[in-house]
Amino acid sequence: MTDPKVLASGIAEAAAIDAADPLARFAERFVPNDGVIAYLDGNSLGRPLRVTAERLGAFVADDWGGRLIRAWDEQWMGLPFVLGDRIAAATLGAAPGQTVVADSTTVLLYKLMRAAVDARPGRHEIVLDDDNFPTDRYVAEGIARERGLRIRWLHVDPARGVEPAQAQEAVGPDTALVVLSHVAYRSGFLADADRITRIAHDAGALVLWDLCHSVGSVPIELDDWDVDLAVGCTYKYLNGGPGAPAFGYVARRLQGELEQPVQGWMGARDVFAMGDGFEPGDGMRRFVSGTPPVVGMLAMQDMLALIEEAGMPAIRAKSIALTEFALRQVQERLVPLGVVVATPLAPAERGSHVTVRHPAFRAVTARLWEEGVIPDFRAPDGLRIGLSPLSTTFAELQRGLDAIEAALTDARGDAPGAPQSAGPAGAAGAARASS
Ligand SMILES: Cc1ncc(COP(=O)(O)O)c(C=O)c1O
Image (cartoon, rainbow, N blue to C red; front, side, top):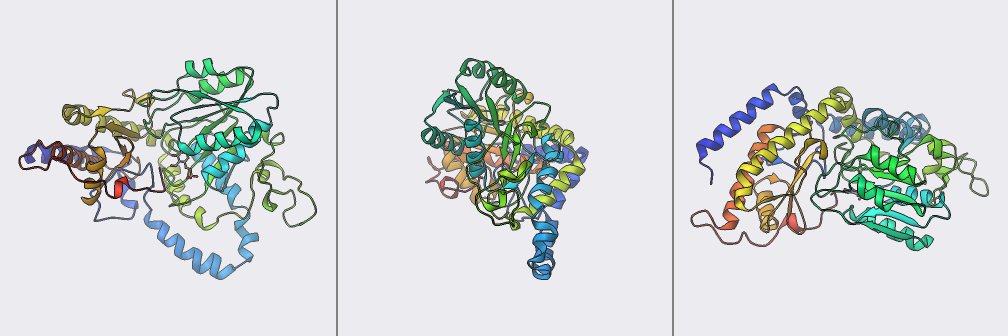
């Protein structure tokens, strides 16, 4: 166990890094939480901003309470598109008219994957990796069953992700669609979206990127990379709150060609005509199905304002500094305790979280949560340290790393009088909604 004097000097050094951090001022804008010593799970559920409380109150009093149903015409009908364009400009490198906020990530994945495979008739394969997020795999499997297609699985190193050479080998004249995560949810591996998109296009396939773990933490250039389709969460680095709706991107050149399967009234050319038969709307309108989840679209607007103020290059620079800081200490302090690093060491190859593995991490995570230190656990033995550049401070990260070392030392039984096992998994082992 590290000497308390050494721990104190570590915190002082981290505080000095915070003092020189050009983005440090943003951390104060989040709702304070005295019970939490270190929040290392912003890659799963981002923290709320103080100003969001005011926004929600004003929404109830003024927009909903005051304007009542008139607010649909005045602002809510347009919100999915306005907000989509704002996300696109601030984080996706995408021109207006290609992004919409709607549904959940899972539902949008279904709608866009189905539209994509139907747009490539005569091709029978969907390519995706076996370590992609479960929902991506399950949705693809369901669509393959529905449409009589096959999945070509890429087998990846779970400490990394899909490399361009692997994609090159897998795609061919029978590939309809390639579905990959830009940042792998487990390892944090940052895929080369630009190169892999070109590889898929050379084979005549379409590509869909899942941006859940990259949007708001890693610069993205969908238009420059010539990406066809993308889907992402808004409750991680966009801090939209639990269950906030997803966003979907469809390149303008494809919009007229694609037909998504959930054709609801809100996707129709004339929403209030209420006529016979479905005629799809223009542009992104046709990818909407039902009533926009307006309440869920409120909080993310406050985080987008912060991202616009800070800028993605500065956010990425801080993200790299945080992950470097974490990895250096993991190497020095946790690897000697038997921990294995399961995240790429090169900054250019990772997003904003670091994953480390140890058989005791399920129990360790349960203890850490009780102590107000909140990373998350991914079966079978991974502890994820999520670093949200605008809300995480270096001092907070240092406190978290100190606590992880102490809990792991106890769980291993290295400390005098420590139990040999830290007991059953508690909150961290239980199912939770955001990943
Ligand atoms: C990579 C990835 N895709 C999809 C999802 C989830 O989708 P949904 O918002 O529908 O639960 C997550 C959730 O954490 C995720 O990490």
